[in-house]
Amino acid sequence: MKNKVVVITGASSGIGRALAKEYASKGARLSLGARRLDLLEELKSELPETEILIQKTDVSIEDDCFRLINETINRFGQIDILINNAGISMRALFEDVDLIVIRHLMEVNFFGTVYCSKFALPYLLESKGSLVGVISIAGYVGLPGRSGYSASKFAIRGFLDTLRIENLKNGLHVLIAAPGFTASEVRKMALTSNGSIQGETPRNESKMMSAEDCAFQITKAIQKRKRELVLTFAEGKLTVYVGKFFPFLLDRITYKHMAREPKSPLK
Image (cartoon, rainbow, N blue to C red; front, side, top):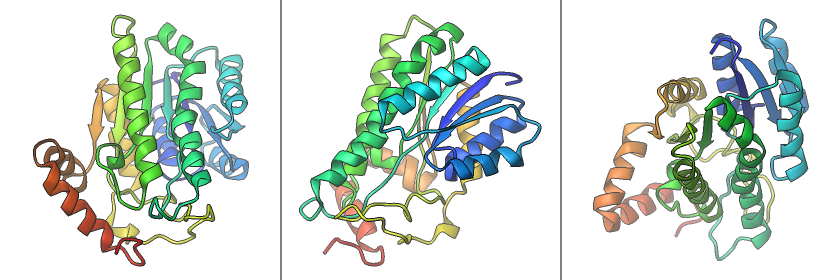
């Protein structure tokens, strides 16, 4: 990874921040995008030995995504890895949710991935690099109370699977990384039925996979040019397996699991 150029969206916290630190330790040059520029500045100061470009980026805005990629090329002249990590979640039943919440989830999670991938693709093809989407187990099984989140993650998986096939003979590596529940800000920042921020997590974050462990596993999968990475056994690999062979059973298990959350919207 020495002197390779890695672009990471949603790099100000959680998995994105951990990915930045992991790649910095490997000698990569970083281009980091996020809405909170102050946190990117803080991260940059923690990695003084690493060449880092930071850019205030709202991935739901096409021009912001173009600027992130364009500034990366202006600074480094190449892109070897793009990690589409930026994303938000929600927590509300579909019958109660304002449609603007669903639209916003798709704009950030799905279209943010589309925009950044579109602008970075020519450079990734040139370097025969890696295009990565960080989804979730919610991209394999519909999570009740998170309809917009699951829809956006399913969409990303379909989009990236298609790009992999389209570029089968072009040397492009495409990885879909699906962490299980990981300790991060995503639940605190999740949107409620009216679009307000939830502000607290309904789960015990200390019992989840750490963002650092998740980042390590993702970087290892990129190095091995894997096509898919499903993390954690019970909430990851086992869920995908049961969904393939016993879908009716998975529906019931998923409902019970999500209904146990404090203040769950499920009856």
